Image (cartoon, rainbow over all chains, first blue to last red):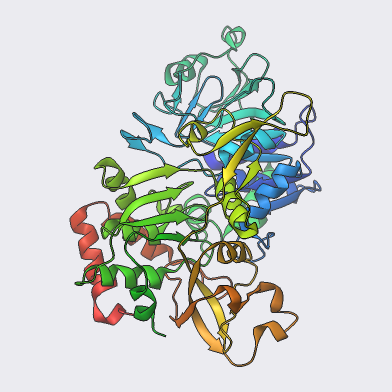
Length: 250
Length: 274
């Protein structure tokens, strides 16, 4: 039986490998991102030559100057792909990691912006990941902007979101239109169920007659990699995730 | 010098910089500050700086009522979830929060380290984090003929930086391994207090292999031994994070009563008074 996290990791892996996107030679993974980390290890262990910099790896951490080095690398354009999420994400791919209600999150406080206000503008490609796909997360307009989805001329920016992966579907992002487009549906979801759980407007209505394509299952080879070597690489950094998804402990 | 000697030197209202849970977090130092705060000379009104984010130590100090202001890029207990005393203090208005973003904090410290009044940083344009920081300025890049706005960040020199390293030597040098971002913090801060697992003989800077991960005593005001002093956070390859304890903390600290109970069991009890 395929775990939802395994399908999400495989979906992110195929976005990473999308030949139409800018090349991903160096991928960085920040805090609390076990599914994106699993996707990156999967890509690497499938044999693709990609450099992974995992900020929260305790042993063998690639940085000798901590996160400052990550941000300096990104500032130079030497990180090709990063992952971000948000307590709220809106239809223009604005991210809110601050909170809801009056500034700074007087109603519900989220953890804070981390490096998003910098990384989202500095990396050529960002994959947005948020497992909870609900009206409270995917909103018409975020209450606060940690990091903007698109920028006007005169604001230095190397790239935008490539896609938004949730627990229900995959959306692709079109930066020119500043809009998402439904790309695939996870098992059990329909165009209508996704529409009902999404607070922002998006494209993809042309799918609705025949149903959007399903999100691909991981292949047997991918599953074997995820359950073996990928899990082994992640045990130290994400012990709770590995225990929950793969029933493995360090 | 003892741990209590160190914390006794933290004045009320100090701007105290702390690293996050994954980078030499001074857990024992924070618990000692909390113990001091329960006494007659309790420390009050601290302004904490997360370098660049905040975790267990910050949540503990906020819960104990030692903190007036927090500047940070995020507050998190990692896999154990949100920081409950921080959220409660923000909700009841008992702390002022200055939201930042990680590279901005690094850059402000680097400006202080260089002794310059400000440094530019890319990004941030279009973020509400920038709009809520009136002292962060935006200017046209003076080296470009095209429209190119860039953010200027003021230098920030913490009154005190505190962290937990692995080794100190007889000369007061401390070894932080690959966590050399702590060197920037130490260079920028006016005073640096360090707890260590152990003190070694000799001079760490005489060892070519240890010297790159060593912060010179030039920058260190005081060192105290606190075995297991990063707990419940991890310390390099010395010990991993105590995930079960962080879960216990996250759960207990959801209520004010639960937090007080946690302090009784793990901070104030004599068995844990190290």
